[in-house]
Length: 273
Length: 359
Image (cartoon, rainbow over all chains, first blue to last red; front, side, top):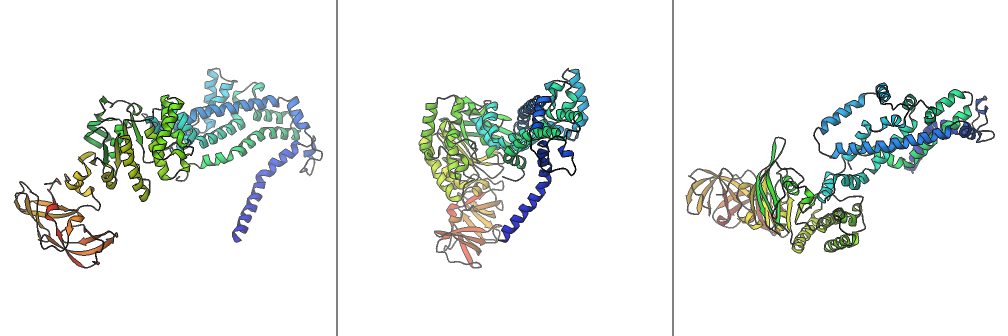
């Protein structure tokens, strides 16, 4: 009985704490359904008086939010695909394949982790400019192709795959590519989902890099579009909130749907299995 | 089916020599067990036969062909690992058919081979299960099944029973014997457990520090160990060793003085050894006796291990650093602290010289 009370107490406490995260999101949703100017009245209302989808209609009809949404979807999906392709194969190679200088190269890569991303942005931009890739999709996607963190994440997980399993497949005549595809990839599923989710969220939410690289508003992703919207419609809080809902909802839904795998991926290797 | 020939195998990891000049011949259809303590290089030796480790020197020949530079898949071998190494996301059927699928066999051919192997190993009812749904013994059988499906010319087993509990290990030992009789294929089996080696092998290869100490049938190794290491390693409980020195040598007979001054007559010739040469006398627990009147060693009982059918009695004596182990009958009634004079059977003694080699 005491256990039950204690459990309920912990749950109540957690519910209370989760309100701090939930309330701004819920209010964002509520404001997005309000009529123009309603949210700016004092005291600000919690719920819309006459809920309306006008803001969403205006967003998709008069601004290019629909196109921006598709741009973001394309960039985030392509970044995820690229990141998985390169990070997973590199992470596996660092964990399980024997090649000269493996440890040295990995340590060298890890040491580069301490360099903040912002430091490399200007040189990267200048390089892309030299190659004529500014204002191109390739330019936006390049930072996502391979990340040291992604390689590290996959490597740590791949270390837990028994080498004997790979050797058994080698004895059975499987090529290295076949081993990777048929034996290793299915075992890496939790980390694939985790890394995929990380990359998708990062690419979807990324503001700074697309802002630097993209000059054509046709190619703007949602965060940049939202920023320009807030500049143009500084008074239209309701419209901006509708834009924020459109930006946040897909990643929130994706995270909720995959959080079970995400947790097992991030916790992997933390305890002896 | 194929024979295996290893010639002058050398393997180093960095500056550490793991295998040093291994020469070994395993006949077609033979069950050879490589046994030795941890770190002796037995698993490395098996992996070099499989092609999973590159050699620094030497040749590996399977049947008539030199496979030294061939990849594992081209050697016609199958290997069963200690951890089973089953693919966890595949069913037993998929695990067993993986190799044949890669080889491009037809679906009917694969199905026939998998079902035949499954029947031999009693796996038919488990074919649709995944490894996590199997018990330890079933996993082991599935791993063996995966190896047999491809009909290799040599089977390699790397400590396959070490993850099983004691009773299952005995059962699986019988399975291995039956499998060998059914398949009549050359099998090379690595273990650190000398009981497994004794019960399974046609021939045992004792390895220490990357060198072969002795090869021979289980009976040969038990009865005629080539050196002190083999004598101590083969047999459970281990052979008793008593340090002494030569008093007198005659034809096929030696008189040895033990540390306490007791003299023991041993029916072993010690050849050229001069009086006072240090020797070690070895005697197995079952060759110690009570009730005789010569070759007696005075001891005190430290501990009795009753096992029902017989008891192991641990005896402290001035003549040995380690307690002597005496295999007594099941109704042995001695207790801790009792004095006991045990006789050393002159016909069953082994004498080892200073270099550890048998005399």
